[in-house]
Image (tube, rainbow, N blue to C red):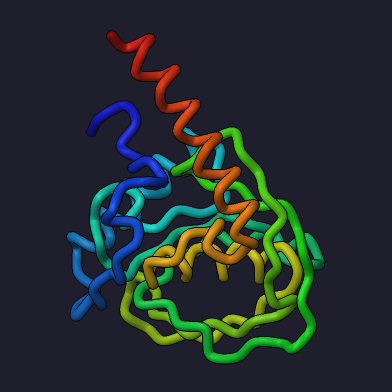
Length: 174
């Protein structure tokens, strides 16, 4: 595994809808374990398979809920089943664009339907930070980037920032 297998935010794969997983098998469980290891190494709270070049409908997250109960979950084929009408705006960042946060509006509460790594179906009701994380990761599965949800000006600032950081990184690499 490369030292940094996470795709940069401008990789075209991140803007494509991920494929549904037909069977939860040993390969999917292995991929989820690899994703948890990458997420932990990068000190992230969520990671979608597409971010490491695997356009499959699989996300992992490790987040507390509103009552501080920790949720370390792999979600196969996650789908938002319901959303609250109430929204919140909080600063989000992404492992595909490290070092940059941007205020993103999200639903305060969501329910997400998914399969676990044994193939069992679940419905998780999430609020506040956990709901925001779930929405961010499900967006990745659907080919939506976090800055796609903000104004054109903020989106352009994010792209400009990323281009500047990328140029510096490429200059150091050469």
